[in-house]
Image (tube, rainbow, N blue to C red; front, top):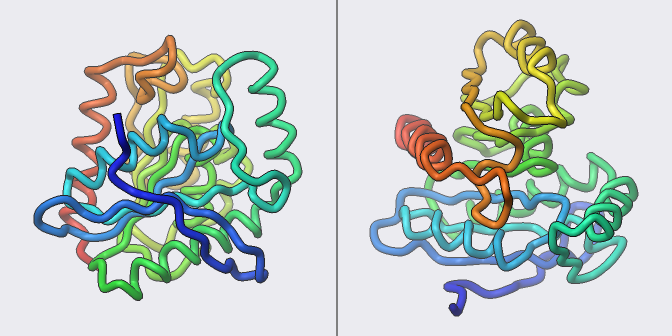
Length: 227
């Protein structure tokens, strides 16, 4: 099935040319959204996710965070692909991630997209947290199962933020989730009867009911925060 959007290239804060998947809001515009990828790149799945957000009335942009190391990286969920994705993640700095998200925010602001939000999955969930803490111009943030958030709980989000975790996530122990809750009581943390990656219909841990509930909570957050 054809995607609704297309790839564009923007110059990030360090001057690097970064590709972004961009899709216009479908129907009545409710704002803009930076959607941050998993370790697997801006894949067909991420484009599908962006298209789904666009159908909710959001203009969406998704940065290819690995472009400085490898252009157009897209991987499946095989063990070899996971290792390649992890290797590229190790080469990609948090500072560059924030620059790329900020560039997306600024692009949407320049198009008068309305209030701009950020969301992301796994690796992108951690980047979402950092964006909430460090970026400017965000009205709200919603991160999914960001395993690295525990490393940054000393930072405070500058916008309303919610987080989603799976209770049975083998990579993110509940002790970490509880530490996040304790350190940042102003952040609403939702825990689902699911594993890691429960939002992705490409993964074995996909949980349709949890995915729908989590997304409804994101949309409620966005609707309540107009910037």
